[in-house]
Length: 310
Image (cartoon, rainbow, N blue to C red; front, side, top):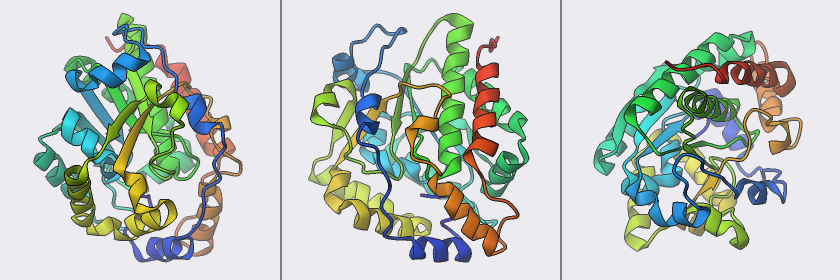
């Protein structure tokens, strides 16, 4: 489920780092598990009790991330937005895999769905082309507002893949723009794409949306993963890292940050060292750096987030 997962150079890199352990801060999940919803006046407990009756949207950086929260997808049937085509370093899109999965789950394909290649996304970050990401946040805010969703779910900031972190920034910007335009604040939730899928302490579970899978739901989730051959290496890596049983629960964690994301992970970010290796292989001319590339982009999205969508 990563940016470099469908090409030979990326496969080699994933295989080399297949057993890596992410450097998780102990306070990470605890600080996520808190949210105040101004729009629906829901308590945290009521979010977990009532989410199935609410209109939802899912926003992910790459096709395939929906596998992490497959049963929530089946039950909530959200409108789904995918920022890139999942092509990695190749010219082969994998959006058709996600389209097939959405059809089985009777979820709805959103108007933003893989229109940008992974390579274009990466190059825009390196080039400091913030206009692309501002435009995506504008289009997302308009689509979310027009569809009348009650809450949005998206990738978490983890410092592992830059595209995932930028996706979260775009979602936060869209939520802020809707609030600035009409005073309506959507519920805003995230899920870990790389970290432990069952990472939410017991004390915080009533403050998150928790989806527990029975055997049949777990079987369907595994089948969906097997139907995504481009992600076979990623799936194997994550199962080896976290254990198969960790995927029997899905946590949607309340987002309690906007654009100041430096404290969300240890530095240097994992994607920096990964990028250096790809530069050494001649795949990229420059590695993405948090302070040089991501932080300025976050600042630009923050400045723009207060503008109206109307």
